[in-house]
Length: 278
Image 1 (cartoon, rainbow, N blue to C red):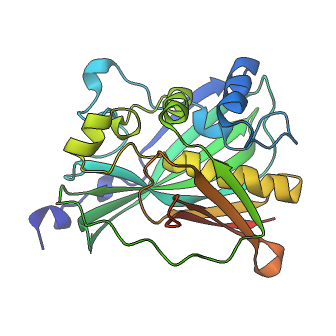
Image 2: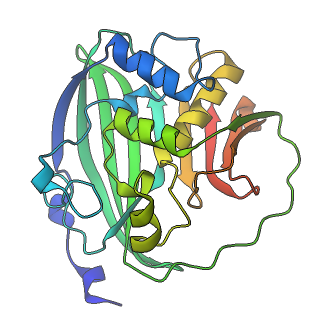
């Protein structure tokens, strides 16, 4: 076991920060236009827009080489350079409205080191709570994973063709869509818009589709099927999703009346899954 894996980051657990943002019509319109036609129209503020609220914004000289804010502020200085969304869950307690002044409180709940097939990993669990006028609207658990720099694994063979799902969206997740989503969320991670960086520095097969964008598409499909916002959604990243050919967003009925959703690359590879409680 490497020395870094036994470093003690327990003092960072409980670290928190509070930010504020306002939902305005421009933000809502730009979000809808960026996702159209794959955006649920049954509520004034579309599902997933909360990922655009109160982003972590720092001065340009406080950015790391990957475009993210340097570690050591809210998040600890994890000794691994690569950062990705691992998954999380959403628990809905109300609805947002245009004009809402939103308070977002973020807290580090856990830090765990593990070893996997892709090398040493560190998982940081962050809890976000979104409130309006003191009333909780959304609680979100976000699991971010840090990994050491390793030689990229060989591409996996395409899976066998799965049965047709009950519901499917074909989404053109192209570079323009990725750029617009990065702008909406003020996400500077270069793997989403800087092709030479993504391929030559981080070793991906192209530009990568954002984890929260994939989760947003599954959430909007679930809302369209259900006709309203669900109670809960838990999601997990399975494989990086390279943009280019149209992707598939699938949903099937699941136990207890819920939905089992996933995102698939053009060749059928599952890149993210979700369990939705309606």
